[in-house]
Each structure stands twice: as structure tokens, then as C-alpha cells.
Amino acid sequence: MVLEVGPGLGSLTLALLPSCRATVAVEIDPVLAQRLPQTAAERAPELASRLTVIEADAMRVTADRFPVEPTALVANLPYNVAVPVVLHLLAELPTLRTGLVMVQAEVADRMAAGPGSKVYGVPSVKLAWYADARRAGPVSRQVFWPVPNVDSALVAFERHAPLSTVDQKTVFSLVDAAFAQRRKVLRGALAGWAGSAARAEQLLISAGVDPGARGEQLDVGDFVRIAEAASSN
Image 1 (spheres, helix red, strand yellow):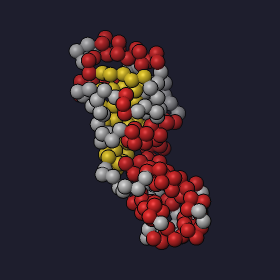
Image 2 (image 1 turned 120 degrees about the vertical axis):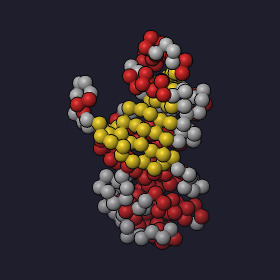
Image 3 (image 1 turned 90 degrees about the horizontal axis):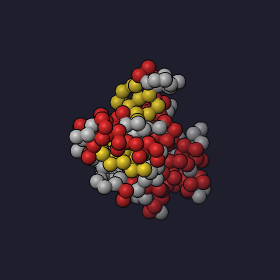
């Protein structure tokens, strides 16, 4: 089952219906949510039964709202909420195995970036906690009307096996702290999170991470080891 977020007038929805056994569209706008089933009935009457529309905020929708557990996300995501939406859905819907989303080009770069990249940061690591992501291609602004002031890009992801049993909130709070002051080395950047610079250094050494490194040098596995060290000490 495919999950679409923000279907709007239904252009992508109508393209999905022939290829999917079931499509669930999550739409926050009540007028658009009420209109979409009618659009499907008018434009694809033989396929309209495959569509379910949920009127909800995609950043708050819960698993119990879905009639069938979704396995794929295909969506043109609102650029200002793209990362929070993807992270919420991956956390809330463990059956979500794969996705292909269109986002602003700069957001796509951040989502798919690896350690050492100038755009590598919090979105990169948090998405990597759940899935392997890659930039799947550019989308020119010229394909839209009216033409926007930004370019877009596709990001594809595949969920991987859980990296650890450590609490996700612990890992994410660690990531937030590591990137809050990018110029600081981890010993100082994590002082507040760990309770002191000395304890931060102790945890980093226990995790096999250089206390003089910076957040952008660590991959998600490094962050996991630090969080595990904190949870066991």
C-alpha cells in the first residue's frame, strides 16, 4: 500500500492508482480532502475504490488511522515540513519500507548527505537512523506553473534494520547537541547533553570517538555508540 502526503488536487494520486493495489492520501485541508475521492471517481471510476483519504496533519497522524499498513511513501512534500514529515512517518509506521519524495533541492542534499559534507547535519543523521537515503535526480523548476524560485529534487530511501536498541530520543537529543554549535569540538558541544565536558569526553572515548572531532565528521553509527555508552554508564 502506498502512502501519499499532501495530494492537493490529485495529480499524483491519479497517477498512482493504476500502479498500486491501495493508496492512502493524507491531506490536512478539509476542502481538498473531501474533493479528492470525487476527483478519483470522475477521472478513474474503475480505480476509485483503491483510494482512501485521511483528513489529518501528516506530522501528527497516527498508525491507527490507516486501514491498511503502508509499505511505501510517494509524495511531493511541502518544502518547509519535508524532513519532519518523513521522520514522523518512519517512526510511526514501522511497515514503511521505502519511499520516493520530491523536496527542495537543498533539502534533498541535506537528507542524503554523508559525513564530511558541508550540508551534512541533523536531518542527514536522523534520516540515516531509519533508512539509507540517496538523491534520486533533479526536478527543474521549469516543469511547474507558475515557475517557482527554487529547484526541486527526488530523494529515495530504503529502511534498514534497527541500528540499536538504545532509545531513539537519546540518539536524537545527542545529534541535536552535536550540531547545535558546529564550530565546537564534541567534548565541548556535548557538555550540556552529558552533564559536563569531562563526562562527555569519557563517553566519547568509551564509544571510540575522538573528543576533538566535530559532529559533521561522525556517521550515524558513531552517534549510536555514544548514546549506548551514555545509556550503560
